Image 1: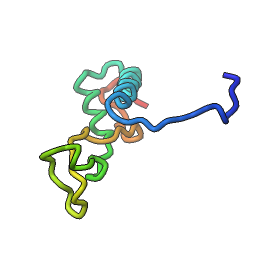
Image 2 (image 1 turned 90 degrees about the vertical axis):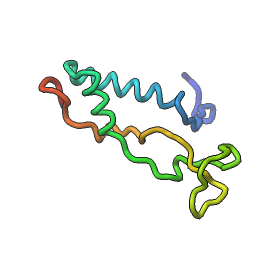
Image 3 (image 1 turned 45 degrees about the vertical axis):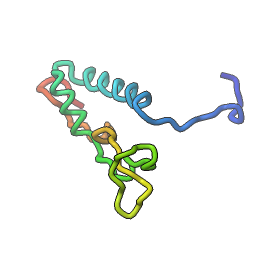
Amino acid sequence: TGEGVENCFYAYEQGTSMAAPHVSAALALLKARDPAASREDIISMLRAALDPRESLQCASLCSQYPGATPIEGSPDMCARPCGEGLLNMANVPVKATGAGGR
């Protein structure tokens, strides 16, 4: 872009609006790698690639989630719903079907 590094900025973002494009890209990569894979095969591969989340990764201030369950040892923090895990493509099985694969 011709800009020096002092004019380039990054931001920390999270949530569904950040997860959706990343998971969509992962789906495209998996389907490209194994075109014969069914919808169920792809979902299975994605689920196998998840790293579990720690309870505090799914926590927020209780005041933001009335009725949520406080986390033991952190009375101001409550567990809240958050996805099944963090997608880690390094965990993807070699292949789902007889076609494709690494």
